[in-house]
Image (tube, rainbow over all chains, first blue to last red; front, side):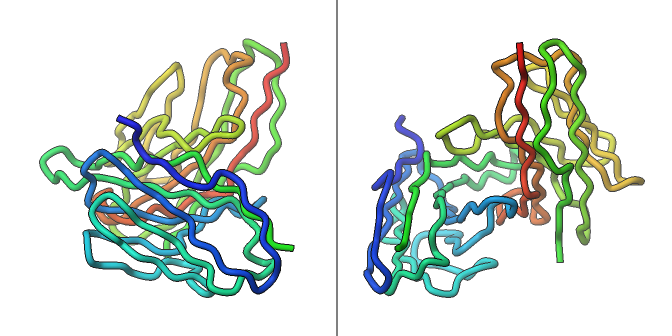
Length: 116
Length: 113
């Protein structure tokens, strides 16, 4: 199992450019998440998807869109990048199995994005 | 809303020292509590968890006890190693663990030989 994979690992954009961050998991998890990590602010949730075909806003959704393409893949799109979106982006996934209590969130290695 | 407050860093300790990283939380209901660790250049990994009051989570020599009366989940380790150098995040989930996590700001720990 590769776990949670993210591409690209690094990206530099100019203000106004667009791009899509890709995330995939091979653990048959239902729920997937996108977070951003900024110095001194921990991780903040951008969007999440509780199951295939559903998406919901998190704490900081402005400037982003997401697509849950299928059960494996959850992409994050920046339509018009801004310097304030310079951050490290993490994708995560978790299964749903009430009989076993909490199911661990597994994180990808991250995408470091710089917007000039 | 839910929030997590953790000890600000950075924290620098000598090898074999005792470690405490404080974490307190605010949440409605009965949250599950977690400590995640992030090694340089990597994503977060679950270190330990506790799902109800008085539970003690433990892993790799680290421990934390869910204290409902003080709304705390402090991370401790009796003797730290250089390999423990990382950023540590306290987090909570208030939906039985299958919904979104609320994170603290992280504490950077550096262990010197």
